[in-house]
Amino acid sequence: MIRNRHKRSTLYSDTAAPPGVSFHVHEITKVYRMGEVEVYALRSLDLDLYDGEFVVILGPSGSGKSTLLNILGGLDVPSSGHIFFHDRDLTHASDAELTRFRRDCVGFVFQFYNLIPSLTARENVALVTEIARSPMRPQDALELVGLGDRLDHFPSQMSGGEQQRVAIARAIAKRPEVLLCDEPTGALDFQTGKLVLEALERVNRELGTTTAVITHNAGIAAMADRVVMMRSGEIIRIDRNEKKVSPAQLEW
Image 1 (cartoon, rainbow, N blue to C red):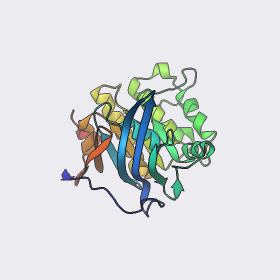
Image 2 (image 1 turned 180 degrees about the vertical axis):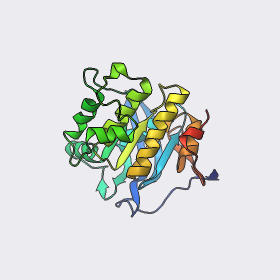
Image 3 (image 1 turned 90 degrees about the vertical axis):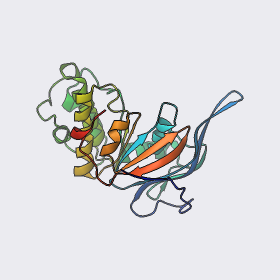
Image 4 (image 1 turned 180 degrees about the horizontal axis):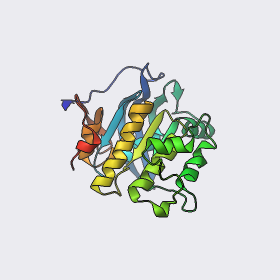
């Protein structure tokens, strides 16, 4: 791993993201106010995410990882600064525009699977494909994550790792440009977590989906193109892996 100190960009401060950049984040700050108390979740943060890359965002609890992911995904907005998705200014987008952005462009994977117990794997994925513009067939999405033989199984008939892979299939079935994952292996054991990471790596490689995974598990970092390290609402370093390893080779 080649380590480089993170340097703040001074380019494209308030314009669309440059070519090849999915997200351009400039000087975003997020402040939560509780009465007279102000809590800074993010502090003047700059970051570019590139088309098709796999990024791991590392940091302890309270470092701002989830807040950053929520802002990237249009679930939250910064208190100040600018964020662009290609030529789309998310900073000043209306609620309706953010809803369209989430529906059309972003797939989410969370620590807990949020599957509907009474629906099969195929039916859980189909919930998304019914509202997408040009979706995959549910069975094709499930094949991509290695569950082609579990199409008609219910969540109760699947392991935790299989349920998480159904959640990944559901997220990618609408062919999102970006996949945002919040601790996707946090509730899984070591071997099962590797299977989930293999599914994410395959989606990134075969579909070219820009993928960001936030985690406190430093062992995952070796599979990423870049590793963004956060602490106290700031990016303290960005490393680039000259040679990535496969999820099967990870140890933690």
